[in-house]
Length: 183
Image 1 (cartoon, helix red, strand yellow):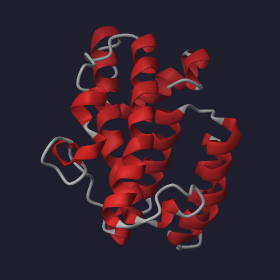
Image 2: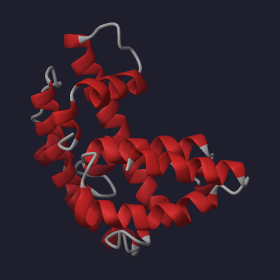
Image 3: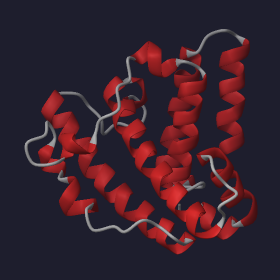
Image 4: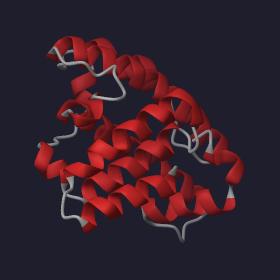
């Protein structure tokens, strides 16, 4: 799956056609949601966001990541209350804690898709089409920021030499195979 994402990003770059990535990404996104689930939720979407950024699609789409306050009481999407779903998580200091965080964040994310879609009147529930919407990426960039914070907490507790999200992801994917499908 990760190699497929890289291949379609390379093709879009080679053809100087960044939107081609989204067209090719859509069926991969559907397939991931319907069957493969490897890598896990946070790793799959982290790679996806990294490709969106590297191709400049975030600028083209006008991505502006949501913030935690958008999902708290008084925020635009308060019905996806961050405090109720995610407020009790301590920083992850182990891979098992990253797995628990991933599971909880994925559950929150599913609700957030519905709340954002209902609030803004967009269909964020269709995995084939939501990838073309700025709102989808606003949410996933927000999720990526939260994931990168958790990765840094994990690395600080276990591998202080790993300082970037990219190096931590590479470490997990190359040395901790059994966790790749669950993070």
